[in-house]
Image (cartoon, rainbow, N blue to C red; front, top):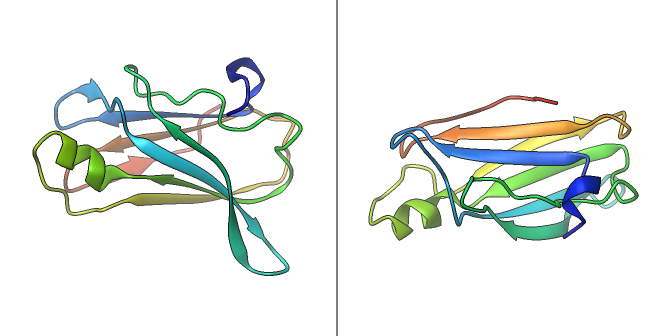
Length: 119
């Protein structure tokens, strides 16, 4: 993982069903190889007690392209002794200006999720 202060991409996962951060959720960051049309994994992480995963990618590695954050929601709910309709959530997004900061929150329950682009 990149240093937290240098990461231009951040996320925050909230368990809206219980009104708490989604701690200990596994996630991965991928970038699409546009020539081969395959996803390359860039980093692996786990959310902290605040539902955040600092240091996803360094400023140097953050280049224009298509990215994907994959959240292992099914495993998270299973760890709480519950089932989930969604075994995972993938958020695919395009970066055209890597000099900006991007924040991708995931608000979720066992049967729904929502995301948006923050800064």
